[in-house]
Image (tube, rainbow, N blue to C red):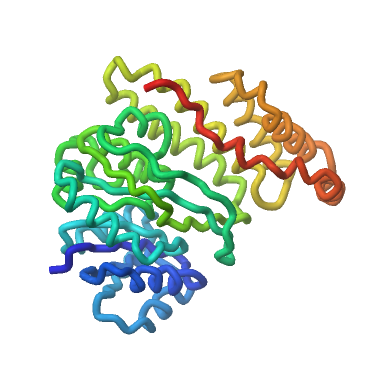
Amino acid sequence: MPQISIIIPAYNSEKTIRETIDSVLAQTFRDLEIIVINDGSSDHTVEVVQQILDSRISLYSYPNGGPATSRNRGIMRSHGAYLSFIDADDLWTPDKLEIQHQALVNNPQAAVAYSGTDWIDEQGNFLRHASAPGPSGNVYAQSLLYHLFGSGSNFLVRREALFALQESDQDTNSFFDEFTKPSEDWDICIRLAKKYQFIAISQVQILYRRSLNSLSSQLTQQERGTTRTLKKAFDRAPADLQYLKRPSLTNIYRYITYKSLEGIPSHRRGWQGLKVLIQMLVYDIAPLKQKVTWKILARLLMMLLLPRKLQLLILSKFPALLKIEHFLSYTNIHI
């Protein structure tokens, strides 16, 4: 049996899945299996995967169910003592599995290993450092405050811990909770952190691909899914951690505000961005003291009031308006 099972949910991923699988096959840790779950793709995803000749790859096709359903299907097909997941457009550094696996071998009290993340664009070019290595040990409180993994492509988990988690959560009929879409990876991070210790790897090993052509509706889905995840988490959290809920909501709306400025500017995205920015300030007015918040507001108002060509002209003449990365700094409080 393989030591590690890697599960790849794939939906219309013909453009990127070969590169993703190649990054898994390039791992210095070799004792693995790759389970690709074709989630009802209508493009050439299946043909691309079938062209990769490696006996460690298995391909299963199902009707479309979404990433959470695909991961759950992959888990049930897996055999490894450890499991990891990677989306069909993300990449790993070659040492990702080896270092995470060794960390869990060296720390038998921990059930999860995770790493830092960089963002890349659709062509694979570096965008920004998204997350530094997080804390180790009992990280339950931190997991409530922000998403430690950053994405579902990050962590390595012991098989017995994942199955014990599914059995213990009586109201969750699967490993990844499909009702918290699209933040089911944050949900499972919180649930694992509540029961098990984590080990943080002190380097970036995840290359998370950001699409700059996201649909406006995804902002609404993101808000709905993350707030649903947060409500579920704090309904189960002890009284002494309830104080984290407000700053956690601030972090959620900070992130969605940032996302509203990605891609092609539009009137609709301007309204959506202004709405979530106001919601963030309802939970915490302190960001108004930051210059970057006013840059965000200026760009949202430009989306609402100006034609696209004039917006682009203004941004070309005032490039400082584009420098908003540090807006994503999480609200930090003493834990």
